[in-house]
Image 1 (tube, rainbow, N blue to C red):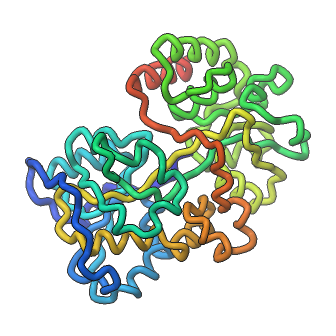
Image 2: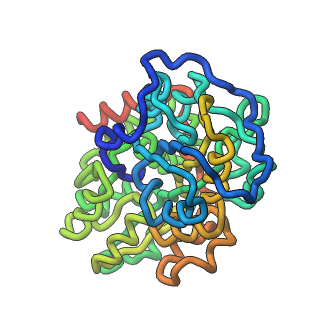
Length: 359
């Protein structure tokens, strides 16, 4: 499930509100620093999901750049971030996710990057995804994190070798003992893949309707629609469910809590959220913005991310990850993954899932 964030309303005070209008920014390619090795100075404002701006991740960057004042604030979605930025909320770097980035791009709130100024760019998982670039081929953001969504099985109750497909979520043998993540793209995507539709992020309105009817027909299959990672963990800990869709990070949390679970990559391919860092069109400290982005792309930072339960997007980070997390951090987990991207008819996905939840 999409990563949990701290309350953005509490963090908003960390930034200065520059006014109510927003206005247009600079959407030319951001120039690279003249001296890429020089420590960053001045003030850098970083706007991201809460678990991207935690101290374990940022402290090494602060030590590398002692004369830089780093200000951070968090948001709950790119839609919320876009509204604040358009309203005058100041930020140099913003986190972008492929399944919700249109509010940022539609308002011209991002400034393309010079990919040559990010030496590790082509090492990163999903750096070749089309969503990373704009219509002119310029890089809009640098992938920094991802989370493959597959199947979670209680290995004491079910033989993991028998669970291979999203279709297993709908097997009548497990009726009442299955959970599904309560997010439109993930739920509709899982249903589509179970039905044999192999492009779940680009369904036509008619296909979305078919998936909705499929989910409604199988609604009694599900014990719960989990609203959060914590809810999913509790469902397995209590023994209420033995099979669900979910991420490797959620599975690792259960394992650490002593729950006998195993994560399985479905044969159809794992769905995966993908997020990264972008420079805003009103960024003031471009040099420091590149410095931060390069840090997040580095093996050092990606190893820290791996130790937090995420995939290390830079494969060179894997030897630096703690042995206990190397399996979940291995970027090979993203092989054949299907990026969760925002469909053109996202409203149809939302309406369909609302109808399924309402029953």
